[in-house]
Length: 321
Ligand code: ADP
Ligand code: MG
Image: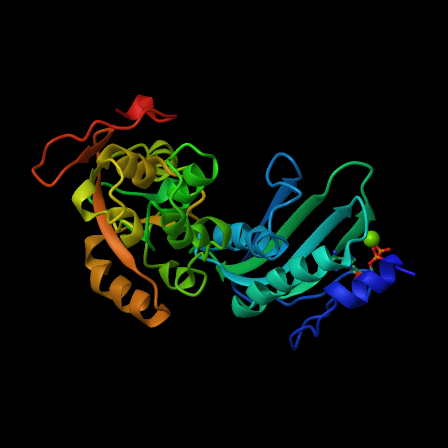
């Protein structure tokens, strides 16, 4: 028999860290540090809309948690714990084992243990809901509204690969198995900089995670902070498989500037913080690259190595061009 309780003890229950009460009671208990604020965020993933039934369950488990941990990182918060709601059309042990393996593996690495959730039958497709809880020193969270003129603009990680993998999968780029093999992890197994981001609290100004594309997401910071920006395309940390791909430079540029599903950070910080930011990035084994500057005048401009304006790919940021 597969009762709800069998599933819980088999797939969800793990030893809770010291000081926390995890799966098994009516509520989980946790103790945020005094003088810190809780940060929380939730994401709902629906079969057929956000993923397909045939998607690899291990990657899905990883990504469902990763996109939430990315939101914590975008606030400069460190992960505390997470909750998982699952609505299942049927009990498929192969699927559940792989999904929870992918989920727990990232949860353990990012120190974001699963401490509770809910499991129900779904009359239709699969529904996955993940909630993360994190903590950040009071007053130090990285808000979208906190960018200031003359701030450096930084990004973490590499750009372009997730979008290229997606376009290859959708058949919008010519089939290229080697390029797909080199880029698919960026799309399926995003690795947000959870170990680096807490170091930015109190050091950086504004931040967000890149989910819809660098230009569009940076646009949210500019709007909330009432300022503009200049980006240097030549400085962009382009994934080497993409820069070597032989793809049309316009395709690469679109992937780098407008490609979504990145789950890395874009943040702004005063230029005095450069050395400390790089030192923190090295300690966390994260790539941090300065790609532009915040300006008082509104508008988002991208320039190439010669200082010429780059014509921006069409998309939801036309009002900045
Ligand atoms: P309740 O009746 O209080 O809602 P449940 O029987 O739904 O309790 O769940 C029992 C325990 O298992 C609770 O601690 C709950 O948080 C946990 N749990 C249920 N489903 C999940 C899940 N998908 N992931 C993690 N924990 C879960
Ligand atoms: Mg319940």
